Image (cartoon, rainbow, N blue to C red; front, side, top):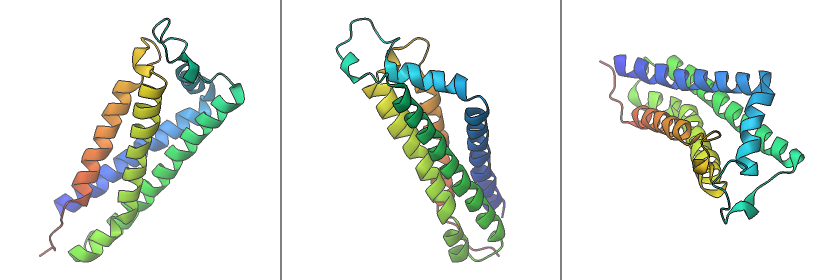
Length: 164
């Protein structure tokens, strides 16, 4: 039972983290928008780098990109909250039923991992060369959150034994 409760708690904790991220992104839109704007503009990357043709400076496109990030985070958050709730409800059921209850949590964790990997590590970090910026570099946070979600996904998805 302790392992099941730990799984529920970790899924809920990642969901809470994302709820706070979405809350901050919505209530302090300008601060986090500035981060996205500078990463896409590539205005603090190494001077004279050959990748500047990739920069996006159109304000409307920066807003679309940022709103997409927020919606993606919110979708993962909802899946995680629903997944934690379903796992909580199934905590005393046989292993096959508990395993089925993990589906939404697994989907939420995978969606969250995809965001950190695709949007922040691949697109932000490599395509827009975020790693070159001393000020607007979210590579460490992205790697940390990819790791948190990934370890949680592995733990949640590991085999479960039936309760005595």
